Length: 429
Image (cartoon, rainbow, N blue to C red):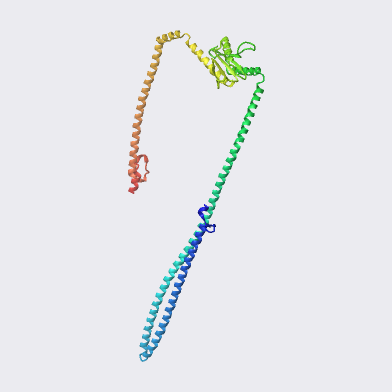
């Protein structure tokens, strides 16, 4: 903004404000022009004054000459009668007055015209002064606006510099922050490892806690099932869930074993499968704290379901529902031949035929009653339509008769008038 508002002097190197230079130049030109016009106006006015003085002097000379001629004429006309002299004197006097008045009126008109011209010039001068004041005000406004723009630009540059400095500081501190985060992560891992070791305690105690938690969860979740605990020292897993429903008993068995070791061992699977065969279990579930490497979450390994304790809570419900569905499918397949023969005999019996006929008769009667109701309602609707039409016709006739007698003094009923009836009435009025 400063480069656009000032220039540098090539000789002295000083910055020159263009706006101020232009303003002073315009003001000087205007003052010079106005002084020239004023001087010209004063010269013309003095010239006119001189002409007026010369005219008045000539007029006095003329008066003096007329006076001399008058005296000479009086001397020559002494012998004339006093009455004729008086008349001639009056006549001459009137002519002189008329001539003087004409000359004076013409001079006054010229003076008035010149005064009007000078008045217009004064008006133009005042207008120019007003323009100068306006230019001064615009200059002040432009300077204030320029200062505001410079302040805004400076604030913007200051914000950008602050952002650059902050970015540089952040980049310098990024490595330090990452180093601190790495140290915190190492400390967090050490703390978790120490906490896990503190919580583990005895492996045997931890296993017993998880076993009790599994048994308590199954007993509370499925009160109809039998949860059989395998005693300590006996061969096998931890507990067996015998599935029961309200209608059926002993739908199947789910075998559970709990492990809370640090590493998962594949030998657990083979031993667990042998225990399942010995107990006659349908499904086996191995609840472990550490999953095998090939599993990210619960899954099936060699016919055994492997999951964590949290996953066990959802998996046990799904497996139990699957055992119940398999049991029901097997149950429905029993005595299938006998059921088919019984069903065939029922469908070909007279009892089934009579029941179908009763159903058809019921639907037929319902259809007949519905048709009768439709016909009755149509008759009622037609009757009511005729009654409504009769009432409407009588009402329209009565309204038309009264309207024809009383005219516009009766209020209009919109339902009985055309949409343009009000406009037509206004045009008729």
